[in-house]
Length: 182
Image (tube, rainbow, N blue to C red; front, top):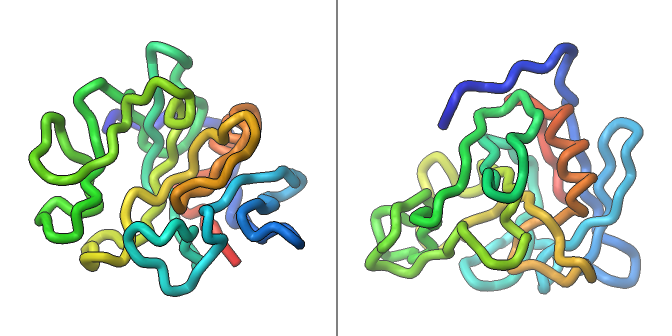
């Protein structure tokens, strides 16, 4: 990760994510004066997240770092550690592998998610501290805040936001900002 991008002012302390009434795969993100829709996992939220269940984990999390596609976007304005995504980066999602729920360099022998994608979902990614720093095998991996599909289709377990909302949020969060998923 590269050095932090300093911004004047204080960081937002708390972000709340609540499932939408009538559709557990969609939600509302509330942060200070911001209220915006978001996409959640295809199975809604769960306090018992398991690898591959399609649920967004419920709980309280920190944002560890931000990754972005430098070939598509300028460096995001944020107080968090930031790095550009390269074509050789992935995230291990194999519960049996010692690098489970970790950033990995490709090619990688175990099951993994590619971070360099053709769609724009991972153009801007905030890594949440879910199942970290010591990952529990099978408890879920690659839980991020990322860009939503144009139709806000459900995710595999992440929280997805419109690109402009993602940029606004990253500009006001810091290392002490908590995300509370209900």
